[in-house]
Amino acid sequence: MMNRKNILLSLGLLLASAATGETIDASDPTKIYTFLGGGPKYTDFTTGEYLWEARLIGNLGLSDHDMVLFEAGYGRITGHDQHKSESGWTSTRLRWFHLFEMDYEAIGYRGMGTQVDLQLAGGIRGTDGQNLLVTGVMPTWNFSENLSLYLSLNLVNAWDKRFENYNGAGAGFDAQIIYNNENWWPGAQVRLIPVYNYFLAGELDGEGSGNFDINVGGEFSPTVMWDITYQTNFDKDLNTFRRGEDTDIENDWNLFFNVTSYF
Image (cartoon, rainbow, N blue to C red; front, top):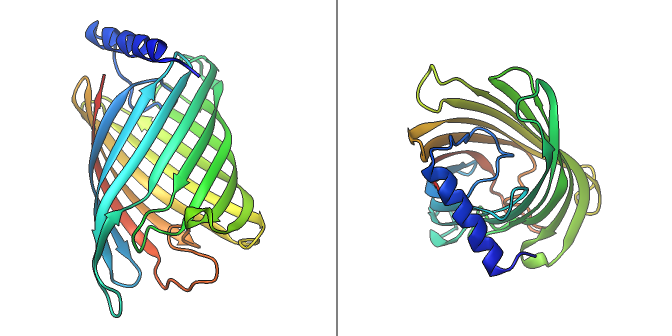
């Protein structure tokens, strides 16, 4: 692990590069950056309930090849039928990403990264389902100067909230199809992101869980970016599933607006 001196040095290098006018490519999830952002998120549930939350997202570039991302949220879900309204922490996330050699100019295969992604259940209804540990690799391709594919192939393990019950292991993928075009608006990018996990063992054996995201983004300035994500869920909702409990609530769709400052 890096000591404090090395972390501060890497932060200094990132700040220096920003000061010299290096262009930030927010459309490329393999680029090593340090940033901090957040914004409001609205989630609509199949029961008619809804959740408003404020989410914080940060990323720390540790070296030329490593970065750590973290997310956290706090929100309030409305009451419905026998359920009262409640406020509290929602889902959190901690992800380490390592980048191998990458040819950013290549057309075709560019290179690969690897990740360890820990996603923790929240404390309130609608977010308090599964803890997920996702490990995998991310090969990437450029189809043109504007169109790219980032394909994460993963091993997924699931536990109930607080790791109370182990619910199984499976395989999954996360495909980011990204198109960017500066002629549309400053920093213009569009992402289509299908995600699907299928469990092969445990309590969730034979079950699948997925979502589909549409993300649109741009820039307010060379170091301040914005994006908005629409997400819809299908098959089993792991945000609300817990072994032996009929939670009778599932995510239907959500919308998240995020503003990010790069350092």
